[in-house]
Image: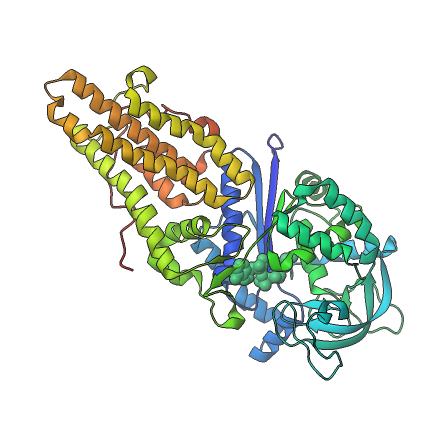
Length: 539
Ligand code: MSP
């Protein structure tokens, strides 16, 4: 295994398999994919994990209702996720399913460690449970709701609004309450560990309000990983599905086996650089998960970044609200890259964002068809007309490029730092906006330097011929650089632009900083005009 580059291990939540992915679930995966691609292009040794959360009561119930065994049910539904990710050009390196044997070992190993350290004890749970969210709610959480709290009236889940169930059972508890001070101190010392800031504050105030021990096994749910111990006379229990699910992040990098190469990989990959999650699941990721890891003597993930929700007419997109769309419907209209661009550009990552058909068409026509697509097609056709379809000879000598050319080059030269800064803050929209400064500058440059006028006299006038070569070279160089910078968001388009310039695919670059320096486009390369990259569409 190569260990000469820095590990960048990033994850998405593992999705409940009882449904096909909708735009909301695909959003987390897409954002993680763009980050994975960007980091690979910067030379990091990326490991990008996604997968499926296949156990628990909700899946058990869905399987039974559909007339399947839970295993048949998850096997039947799992391919829809893999197909969707392929369709969206998601570049995950691994795909974990919590029904795998390796994961079972990993969960049981972690549970045993926590039992041995005295962090797990026997107790009895009595309280409310949300099956769709697989979450416990205590009286304090429900107090704000102003609801009757008897076992026959049914209060609603404070998160998803669906009716809660009253649960009374003997099971096993994790001493979460012991870790409140540790977590507060940890987040104080590591302010970047939960981002954005609003989510960090939310986590801190939740911890300050007091943590309760957490029931980590279920007595009446058969569909789960068996608790690795049973006391005499006890019926077998299964692990609470969130306890099981969170552990996927370490299973996938080798935790829980005796194999030496797994142990080596675990030491290299863990802790993860970042867990991408939606804001609805931060308590699990920023309270329960770090406490479990710390109790087991394992390091904590470097960062959890929580994004907001996609809203349709002001409401969270979800299957239960009946407003969920599948990615396929949009990919059919906008293409994969049009889809990817819209969600990364139009929704501020970290905040809730409204999405609409109108906004999508507007972005597509304005930014992609007009700005980027048009730049490429008119430039490449001029190169065909005026330079016999070849990159004109021009070494990028700054002294000969003229004032407008110098401005264009400056925009390109400033871009690496601006883009790096935006990505370091998970500001995808900001990164694209910075890149679009170069797209716009290149279009303006063509307008201002009017190659079509230079071409009129180029045959008889060497100065005009040189000026024409410079202008087209500079504009082509800008296009090459834009293709590299946009590759994490629009990989196919970037690879296509590079192919038309006679270059290696943008997505295979691993030294973005060096490759985006001005003046590397080889003179004499064939430039192929090709079809328009994006066809304008009707609203
Ligand atoms: N299985 C758990 C996660 C376990 S991770 C150890 C789960 N699964 S989920 O399928 O319900 O949702 C996963 C992700 O989808 C969450 O990050 C959630 O925020 C995201 N989204 C679901 N609907 C969404 C929107 N409408 N908008 C944006 N993201 C949303 O929770």
